[in-house]
Image 1 (tube, one colour):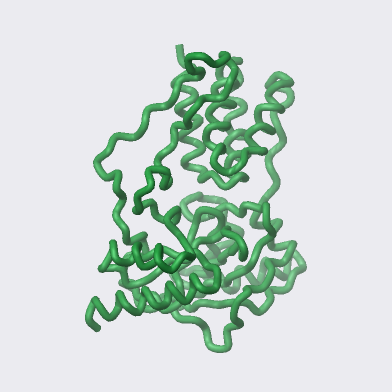
Image 2 (image 1 turned 60 degrees about the vertical axis):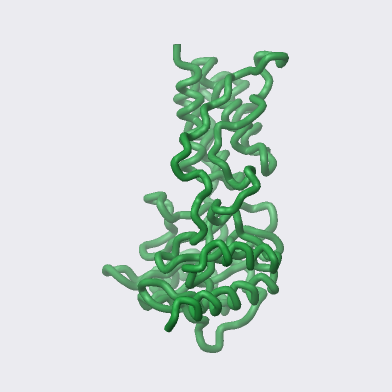
Length: 306
């Protein structure tokens, strides 16, 4: 089939998903975001100072040491480009004429989508693993939107509660709820049905229910959002509790700024290494990717080094 035909079909499928309030981006045959980053070749931003001129030494930094997530106003920021606006969807696909599929952003209102990727390859059986989890923890897996993958697996879509950021398990060893089960949550995306990849086509399962997807069972949700570890009360001063809570309460747009500021204060007090795990976990619960949170902690440690 001609590339132009595949591209047109992917765009049509993406527009249909957007009309159902699912934010979308174009994907290449590799399942990666198709629009190239406008920051290729640029050096990463330098971390900000612990305090800026005209501010008190303990005030949060004016700008966070984060990679651009679209603040520059250009496209090419992966899932952060995801949109439901038809004109914006068309613009994204126009910038990537090689796109043959589309991704659906998870964690976005109004559906707050959570995806379970059940693999059945390389000796794994995610379908059986999910059934075992349901039996062990006493929940039923409801009928919901199901997408069949080219490898024989499936994606199950669930809606989540507003205000709960389910983290991704992909790329984070030891965080998947079971063998062969990957979680797509806040900051992640699912390959949309109808997409063409190097492995084949993603298809909506026969008799699959339509939107809205089924609500995620409460007991399954608890498995996907494990409790935060206890704070290191014995090894850190009392204000350490306030630093971690400060990060936990971060609103969108201030998550990295707050994390960096709190980490700088922790390292200045001599408790940065002991507080780092709790600060990273608090940041990921706000939706910040774990790798990004760890990089921010490392920047704070370098800033505090003599």
